[in-house]
Length: 267
Image (cartoon, rainbow, N blue to C red; front, side):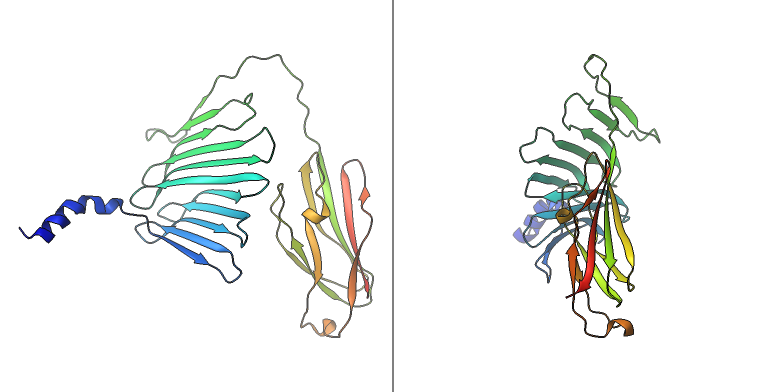
């Protein structure tokens, strides 16, 4: 037998376990994207990072394109990371997520297991504080609903649990001028909530509440939420060259509400 054919026959059983089909890309803004694919060509996982590799995200899909999971990632103020393993067909076989703040005693750890079709078969919650029971989920093929087996919690003295009070942070723009102004509120990254940029046009003398954010037991600082900037526009009423500036007023605060207000005036 030809030696080359013999080598191919020996190696053939292992071809399906070759390295997963993944493609890495550096985007125009310096951010990076890594796409891994199922054998049918559809996306299995998408992992993205910003230019400084401080903030990231990973999203997983099954072979039909249905989303299986999504986790935020970071490399500062502690960490948030994942360890992903795949089947030879490109489907995620297991995922381990870990997140912890810098210097804190609490942490979050989740373990997922999937079969080759993308069906989740096991899930472990190993987060801390330890007094919270660890939950184990198993999804047998014979049942439509999951069997939930809680870990027995330690018996402790009954404690009074206080409900968290919602705190509202409100962001307001006040146009003090006689001109319509187009602005953008640039979303800032923080540890508490994922925000998006806001574009809006303010009419002359208009006051607009652009965003209200609710958090448990705390307000969101302005510098951790939005930074305003002016935007050029082609609208006839906005074409005239005008110079404006923002003035941030002193926040108005009550028991569970805090309002930040920017005033737009002529420069």
